[in-house]
Image 1 (cartoon, rainbow, N blue to C red):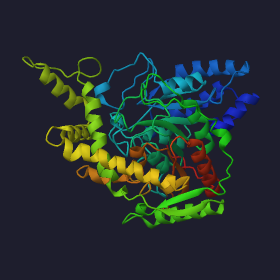
Image 2 (image 1 turned 135 degrees about the horizontal axis):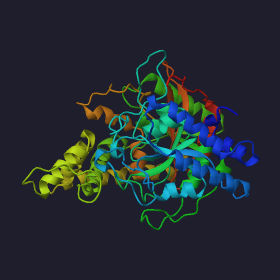
Image 3 (image 1 turned 90 degrees about the vertical axis):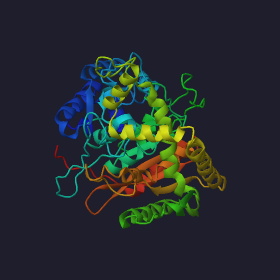
Length: 495
């Protein structure tokens, strides 16, 4: 059977269980596609030997009738997850040569469920970026094109390699991480589904840290059902992570009824941004109608502190990054600069960090160090923390009024061209996170669902924000939206 790589997780699982395909066949189909897709630069560390070994083991488990939902399904792992014996660089020069001797909890959970790792995926350096242009491996490329234009487009960031690989059918699904939109924005740019669960739902242990109070892992998949299947396998309490929630993980797939009659969907008036493209506005209006037709009640809501979310995020995230990235100093692992005679330890730190970190990471470390410095701590960092508490309270107030989910655009535009954003004005790039950062600041679950195409034939996504710990309910609302939108477009193959 050809085109096995194009199957969804759910379809592939059913075929594995009825014996019509094997995990080895599925894995070989994906490995073959990966080899042909060098132009996308999505996979940066390929692991075909590990994949084939895991696929054979999965086939044996399935034959014995001991097969969890993810058993035998080939996936890609973002380069931010530490994987035992496989390079884990966070797309940074400073971690060159680092091969962990341990497995991240999320990837271990997936392997315990029988998933097959095809390799590690490209990303923005240390997950800092919205376009996958800060990677030491070079840019990941979006499989979508504008009309007949050959210009390369961004797959979004920071999980750009994951988004590109899933959209181009190089793997059946992939892991991503989301600190300010890094699962949802690339999912919207590539026409796939991406969910960021509630903070604490997935363990952060073994995931290279960017901003510890914001980072959260999640699945990037071809549809909502697949997101439910993979999320369940990724979640679970982990005593190694002090922020991991000790809560039972529901069967998310069983909650996908598509019935949202009587659900209250909030439309935040503050998300009507000045200068928002008409197509995004029209898509949002269309999303409201689709949910209304499915039986939901649409209500206007207010999240008054939304306008402060981006500035607060770009104080808190760099502050946490500057303290997390202090450990990369050339002493214990990773890159160490060559020193001149007479250089001491200070010169070693300075040269190593100057060579190992890219410009965007350096910029954020400097911003973070500045806002944490003695003279500015209260003026910036403490004030941003207070704003964060107000943003969280805005959501709590809305949910207390009986709202079940909030509908917003996922991104302020469709995918833009690589190199189109001016590096001299980083704020322009930061504005890509305008609809997504509030969710991380409040620790809430959020999902991006593809809902239409723009006038150039590029995918656009809608975002649903849910109540804390109610990912099952959120996935069901997303499932109803997905069914109503009927998005089935795929990128034309040029790579």
